[in-house]
Image 1: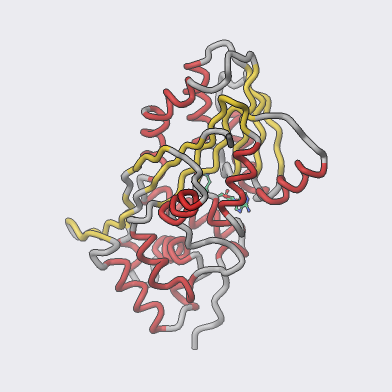
Image 2 (image 1 turned 45 degrees about the vertical axis):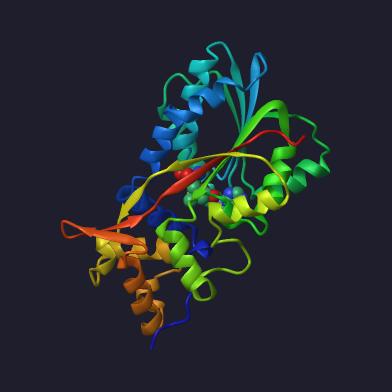
Amino acid sequence: MASPMRSLVEDDERYFRSFQVFLQRSSEHQCMQDFVHGTLTDILASVGDGKAELNVIGVGSGAGKIDLEMFSQLRQKHPSITVDNTVVEPSSQQILNYKVLVSKTPGLDYIKFTWNKATASEFEQHWKESKMDKKADFIHMIQMLYYVKDPVATISFFQSLLHKTGKLLIILVSGTSGWGKLWRTYRSQLCNADISQSVTMADIKSQLDSKAVGYRSYELPSQMDISECFVEGSEEGGLLLDFLTEMMDFGRTAPAELKAGVLALLRHRDCSVETQGKVIFNNNLEALVLDPLP
Ligand SMILES: C[S@@+](CC[C@H](N)C(=O)[O-])C[C@H]1O[C@@H](n2cnc3c(N)ncnc32)[C@H](O)[C@@H]1O
């Protein structure tokens, strides 16, 4: 009989391993890099208001790979700036990985890093308690709003920290991605009710629209090879399945009927295309850029 299912977010180490497999099997970071080197460059050019030091806040930065890509573009557009970079990241492992990446990357002397081992809400509470009034020129939250209780409240708080020419960048899965279909179908069985795990950018946009909050949006086409999920006993397939379902050891702990249903949906045309013997999942992302609150 299957044992009770546990959420993947309860196990930092397994979450990190499955996230690594996800990154290897998907074009997730490639499509973000394309966006950073394309559209985002002009957006970064517009921040800063001519100041010599720019304040940046990264929320849920992970191992910092995309953060450093954004810094290189920011620096290209503002060659003489220094950066005060505040990292908000609850995972010690990810902070360590980010620090290692920084130590291995030459030419980052213009950035001062302040590491906060904290969730977005802990950071918010600390900020309010210490009555901080520092304004930020650029804030990003990339693929992290799934892990907060109230994404739109989190957006409003960070938006309130923006300097008058500042920008807030949010990236999440698109409502038309395979993730959207998977979560709409299996939300009650798979999603952790304490957080907003099943949120897509379509949900965020409709909530922002209802509050008349403006934004610009950009589609980031992306895909993920999930073929290994269908190979019984495959370790990598198991980790990828964990990342897709956000359940720990889903392949072994899920009730048979749920596992069969999820596997069938994952390869269904609503989520994936089958090509050259591979199952390619729709991992499309969407980016939103917000200005400061009026
Ligand atoms: C899917 S990863 C994305 C990492 C990175 N931004 C990227 O795109 O590669 C999600 C990140 O959010 C972090 N995280 C989880 N819960 C969080 C919370 N409540 N507040 C802030 N970050 C959180 C995780 O530790 C993880 O590093």
